[in-house]
Image 1: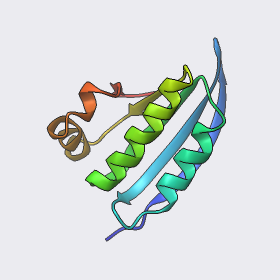
Image 2 (image 1 turned 90 degrees about the horizontal axis):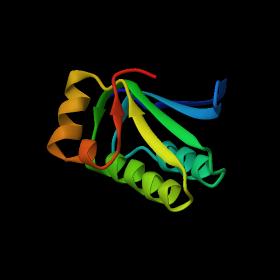
Image 3 (image 1 turned 180 degrees about the vertical axis):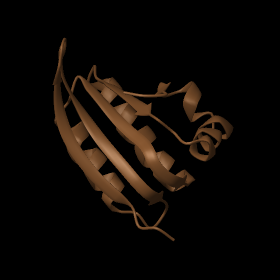
Length: 109
């Protein structure tokens, strides 16, 4: 099993800044960092929070739950969360769980 690596950056773009949370490794029930980082970033109320999942080899329902919670919090505050760059395996999990019907998924940032 590969441990989850999480990094956060704020990017200034035309039209405003956005926060990018990059995930690499495996996001599963044992991963506490994901909930902590997403919670901390959601309370900052960024206009757009991109969760770059391109580095994930695996994601389970517990990690998806954390992402959905952050999405709901941000949406309630008038902000957005989007997922970026899922591998075919992660994209399939997003599709099977119907997360891709709730949270926008982009091929790239």
